[in-house]
Amino acid sequence: MTTRRRVLGWLGAGTGLIVAPAAGFAGYLWAESGRSNVGTLSFRNRLPIPPLLSPTVDADRRKRFRLTLAPGRTELLPGTSTTTWGANGPILGPTLRARRGDRVAVDVSNNLPETTSLHWHGMHLPAVMDGGPHQPIAPGRTWQPYWTVEQRTATLWYHPHLHRRTAAHVYRGVAGLFLVDDDEADALPLPRRYGVDDIPLILQDRKLADDGTLDESGLEFGGFSVTGLLGDRILVNGGYDPHLEVGDELVRFRLLNGANARVFSVGFGDDREFSLVATDLGLRDAPLPLRRLMLSPGERAEIVVRFRPGEQVLLRGFPAPMGGNLLIRRLAGGADTFDLVKIVAAPALRPSPALPSRLATAPPVPGPTGAGPTGGEPAGTEPSGAGPYRMTMGDFRFDERVMDPTRIDRVVRAGSVETWEIGNTGGIPHNFHLHGAAFHLLDVDGRPPAPHLAGEKDTVYVPPGGRVRLAVRFLAHSDVRVPYMFHCHLLAHEDAGMMGQFIAVSARDEPRVPADLAGAHPGHGK
Image (tube, rainbow, N blue to C red; front, side):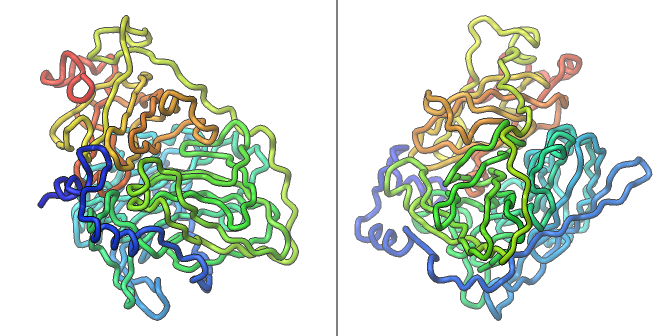
């Protein structure tokens, strides 16, 4: 039985109604939902901090980083050894760091037993350097992308993106951060000493047997899963049961939800307030006080937290407000509570500068610039009667289509702005990630987005029955043959075919668009 039919056997035709036998389903809910590790951890292990990778400068004056992907062994549970994958180490990878304006290159060598790829999630770069399904790296081969960093300061990341194998490769451990710096951020009195008062937190979950074996059963869909594998062991920076010692009054945490499917609603065990200072693609205009922050897979955020001398506090994942009906929320992990890391403040803390009331000049919400190269209007104009580009998410597809690597679903004008409307017509959670672009949320279900969703993003949660409207700013890079991707970032959904692709084309390159893509926008949303 196919993944699609198996899941739809439990969901009533997009309604989210469970039709499984009551007794078996009740037993599943009792065993698998509302899970928690609260009170079970000892926080015995020091939190690993991914090392910064130093580049060399090559003959072309590029900063050149070198990553080697390979299997390894990691002690996750005490006294056990787990087979994992990593970059330059047994699990996860080092943190890459560059400045706006830098010319960079990365040598990615694949010593894994399978073909893979490496995508630069959130990075603004040409499609041919993006590291998606169209840039596979065979075992024993090295891929050498290069580009100029053309965006403001942000916390980005890298991970495999091979068609139908993304979930497995990320789950085994290949992922890492890519930090972008700029002069505007450098001028702010924010915590900035990496690993000291500027701490990365890569949040993931795993299923582990008692002997440490990584359990991949249900990695796509298993049992009554609707979102993919949900583990009951939380890893932070690739470490299990961690604690972190801090020595400063203010600490900046760079949060990444690097999980396959789990949604984290992050807060502190004592319900303290923290300040949101950045989201997916950069700093906010001002700090936003919060006590909870929900992150779906692929989303990032930077928060600043104040500590008192000698205190201990838990960072926790609380039940997430995922929408949908109660049963689906529980099946998707929305009732789960997990302690993530214990933070231990030193008896005496170094004073920190006050958090500024203003941060950065955030990019304004852009207006549409036209219909793109196949819409019949010149770029920079609003076409008469033009509306948003609409897509539906349902049945693990976009507009009833599964991913076809040979099909281009959309042609856009490079550097243009379009309004996209994404509706989740099914009963299960999804999110939406767009390569080759940045977007602002215009509204969520017809209402202004919550304050924490302001600013440029590349990934957004779309609840069951929900709809988001986006102002999408496409990159200026033009390529008539190599596409960018859009997809659900719940990786089992992506691997099941919930992905599409578009090409961005300049006015100069428009005559070179393949003939079968000419005319009206092809594919979705015609």
